[in-house]
Image (cartoon, rainbow, N blue to C red):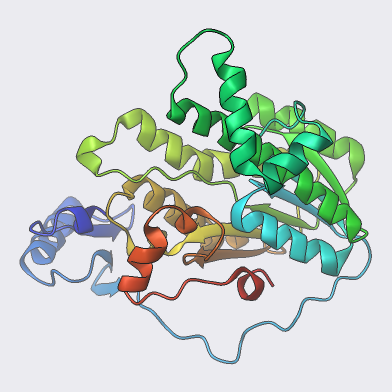
Length: 328
């Protein structure tokens, strides 16, 4: 991601064993500086030099997953964007129990509000502007959009819960900030009170704020990384402490984590952490099934469907993932 922002600079990451000597490290760094400006991620172990490469996986895609018995899903970031589409698809096929964790507050919306927000957003915004202006303070369109966005997320959450339950599945919504250990501990107590096991933990929470590194504050960098990194660590540690260690862990990463992307150094770092975690976790928990999905851009919903991004993708010749194809 950094090399995409500094095209004139040599940018490279070199991994060494912890026991590597200083002279060995110095010589390797000189070699890496003088040769091969293409490989950005390099490992050095004695005389062996290696790097990550792409390999096409053929004929190994799993068949349609069959769910036996009532499966329990814990899903972070589980109420909006691509996650909502995936939860809906899973609910149809599993009829399982879903614990959906998100920061979105849903306790201030009536059923009528939900219906109007989702079916007549422009009319609701106009009414919202009048209500906000009635206090006597100056109200800007930006303020109205921010307020409406929060209400829209809440409405989407309540609508998702209703759809999940319509498929014969169960949905429990828990307001949770995954970066806050206390919030996670409280949420885990609620999950523990409702189930004695967890089958699938899907870490789908994410935050993206594209900005070049020189324009990005340290606080914003941590904010973006923390949702992926600390969010996962907090949830996984609490699941283990509650004796609810899942059978499978699915991590929602991004191709930005694998290939980098200008303006997304923090987003790339957080996502790549999850993919590296997918390699490491089974070495500590041999029975645990772990997979990291490096999602590309989804059409219609999700982060990449906003603003001018779809047009940019089209000009670049990148086909966006259609929800009906991608969710299953």
